Length: 227
Figure 1 (cartoon, rainbow, N blue to C red):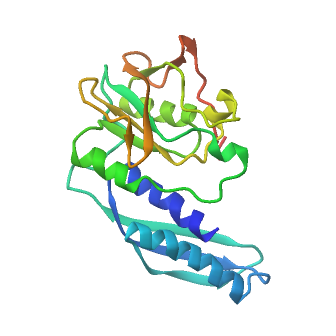
Figure 2 (cartoon, rainbow, N blue to C red):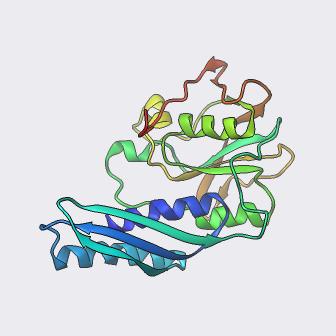
């Protein structure tokens, strides 16, 4: 749980091509969370923090009726060059890293924030827009398109995890892969550090946020805590 709590926050730094520096943890500890449990929780957090080069720099600890944990990560990127959601342009190709729907199988305990990939895209000026897939590709691509004021056309086959239906993979969420756009003329490698990079479509003009998959409308469905 500690590993995942920090890893999902680091994923946001990865999506901006940033480098994490420090993290802050506020935790509400229930009666059942004794020292052994807390030691394990922070051990998992330190594991992913050390891998990312980030240190625990502060936070707050108090008692409560249920476990609540909030993590904030501080990172940096070159001034004016951090990857954002609103930079996609007409004609850009759409890519996603890794596989979609892995979490739907209920077998994955840990995942790797794509920090090195984010920095690679930024350093080589490959991506025009980028975000992490946390709430499902269908919903997150919709958000990227809305921010960029454009539409998207997707073509299969999508990189769906084995044993998972495409419809589930598109909407389940918890993938923490990078979704990015790049000029069609740019050469994007087939993989980066062993992680597949799959071209899944293109950015087109049209109503902001409109999406199609194989020519059919694709609804912006996924995990939305405010719906």
